[in-house]
Length: 77
Image 1 (cartoon, rainbow, N blue to C red):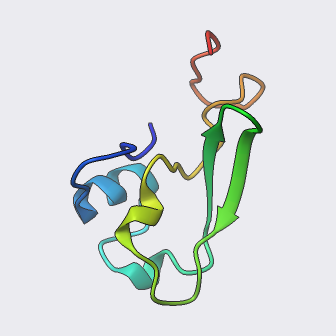
Image 2: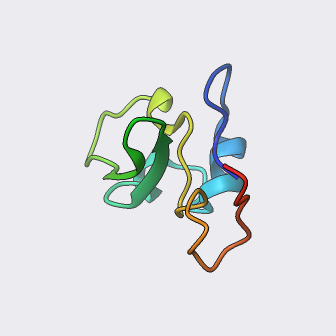
């Protein structure tokens, strides 16, 4: 499950998706994934400081959009 792509997002939601705790410092340097319809699954890394909560929009801690992954994916995409 990815963080919702819009609306208010609290750290409880972010932590339920990523599991790195309730402080921004727990996310620094960690990788995230998201799906772009034009490019497919992309990844990035949380910066060292000063990143906005909106950076979490639509992101997940694993490639949940790839049906070859070893997670519970929705292969109908």
